[in-house]
Image (cartoon, rainbow, N blue to C red; front, side, top):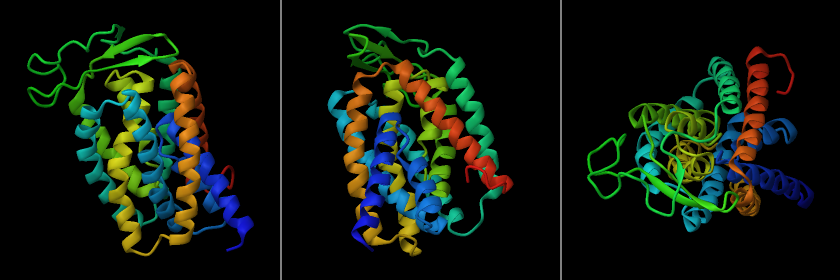
Length: 294
């Protein structure tokens, strides 16, 4: 491997890390297509390397978000349990079978979610501005909690709005089911699962976009390991390429996390929608074998 090649890989990984930490996606939506289409890596190697990088990206972003208290750790831990199981199953399937049909269906889902993200308002029910903790905490658990006494409500300070934002997740059981799907897609396609986790938390659970992206990074840092282990065991991860990728995504993730703190949630949502549309077109084109964007 030449120095120029390694530098190119690092630059691509940095782009993935930047976008992944900004939107809570994990970076795989950039790394997998670049590595497989631009650098000519076998798809399984690109996916395996991406999953290793996703762990690094999400962990870096998660640490920064935890410091700013934007991520909802309790909600992340609840969703991560089922997502990890899904990631393990997705990794086993992804290393054994072709996923053309799944890719096509996923492309359609991404397109629909992208539209919903544009037309639905940013705020979810229960969101407001207050310096006090979110309602429901410390009184036997919040509504929508999967277990009594477990408070999943959250509050954080939004510098762009200049105020505290409070919210309380709803429809948590449905969120658990979709988190399992997100984990499965993470292990299958090496995309981290954030393309499902973020809209699920924002649209279904009513979590504000900034908190959804931050919490998604925390979930991914806990669950992508399950899928990565499968690819490691089956020999689809090049250690040197993985090392270069991790360095790149770490540097890119720091910049993305910083930008996410100052950008308005509405702007982040619009960028996220554009990413979803691109992903939808690329995956549909691959599924239909049109040779466009794929």
